[in-house]
Amino acid sequence: MKGAGFGKQGSPTLEHANQEKLVSSLDELLGQGKPEQILKIHHSKIEPDPLQPRRKIDEAGIKALSESIKLNGQAQPITVIPLGDDTYRIVAGERRWRAAKLADLEVVAYVRGDLDETQIRLIQVAENVDREDMTVEDTARAYVGIVNVLTESGLEKKKAIERAGISKTEFYRWQTINEAFEAEDSSIQIVSTVTADLRSLEEFRRLEKKAPDLSSKIIKKIQGDKLKGSLREEIDSLTKPKKKQEKQSPVSYEIENAELVGEEILVDISKGGKAKSTLKIDKSSLALLNGLFENE
Image 1: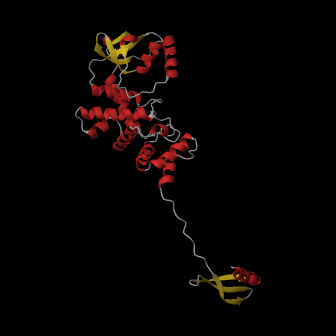
Image 2: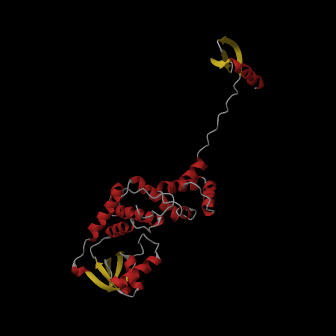
């Protein structure tokens, strides 16, 4: 998944097949557009969608795109819906509209009057979710938004999640993360700058609720650039009990019997006064062995 894939310590685990579901849905909904539906519209008559899931705008990228449109023209039309009074609202292609606006040019637009609210949201999610500059926050809002729209339209939640192209587990993780971004007491915004891994972000949110003192320690490490491992490793180090090293009982050895066999000495040794074993040592080493036991 490219969207929200900027994290230093991992990215959301969206299956490739699920990405294809979204892409195919986008292709089906956008289509090629009939010639009479593609118009040149002045940028001032077009407005962005306030419910567009992507909030972060790369101004440098818009400027570069604007220069490209000046030189080469607009390669692909944006998709809009008519609002009446010769005005339109963007469904897909807000970056291209912003670039054309910056260049004070007309916008090539595919006008769709046949899209309902559900289709509009699905198009927006499909268009944005695979973008490099989609933040974790925007991606979470997008997935939760499309599932909500689909269920409000009467679709069973399980089917709505499948239609959105993600697994049930992924959806509930996105939901938890989205709630964290909306909560005033959460530091998820800071944490999302170091990782985009769904499971790690979900675990951090749980830690934030159950043990805010521990989550605060993580935030301080992030802000001080002292987070050495991954976020999940840091959470584990704070929450999982450390294994206590078992103290080994002292072992005493005493020579009970020594028998000379040729140039070797067979020595019976008892370990802790229990099990017995036999050592074969060179006769010349017996004095050294005795000395070691005497010094214990």
